[in-house]
Image (cartoon, rainbow, N blue to C red; front, side):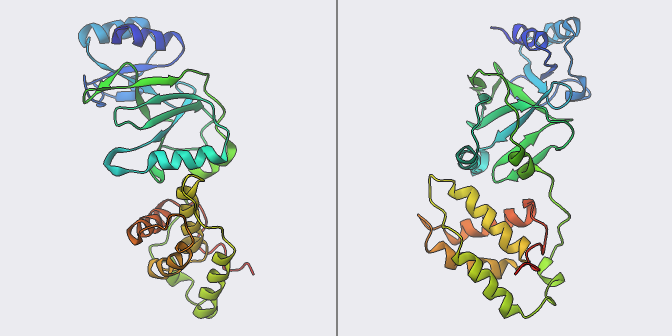
Length: 271
């Protein structure tokens, strides 16, 4: 199937498309995904002018779909995060492989409750209103996009929506804000007790996402500094299978600080 024919097929299904630079993901039109359309005459003009143009598909309200993009480029752990998510949720939805050997999972648009984001979870990008993806049979850097699960887009699980929500305002040094909250040694003791009752991360059983969530609770919920959090995570890490490297734990802490959804200090009042 030619790119032109594919563009018409998407449009016939109510999915607005626009042309991208051949072999790349860069829009060819002035306004990019905002120019996406289902109008066959406009599509014909575009692909007559650029017959090798890749296919961009607008996400969000325009198409009625949103996309969770599990990214592998630059060593991002998108597929590990996907494995963790699939262990928690029963997901069967329209799915494609990307040019970076990542995964696009396409869901029904849940309304304007989410916004586009990068690394919302480790290695996970999210495309909704004002965003777009490149779709098959486009080719980027010599690698084709391919649909590997051809089923209707599923409803995005409410729990996953919550995990993908934009983070609350992040204080640069939340531990300073809460340093006056009781004795610091007592707080460290509380976090140790919490970790004693927290199951270790197990590879193949959602360990990547579990560790990210634990890091969120420590440096956001309990308001510990990165160094304090690392010290306590290292203690908990001894029981993980296999244990994380210190570099991996630092990455988890940084990602939790930047992208976690738990409110800073949320666990300080709980006893």
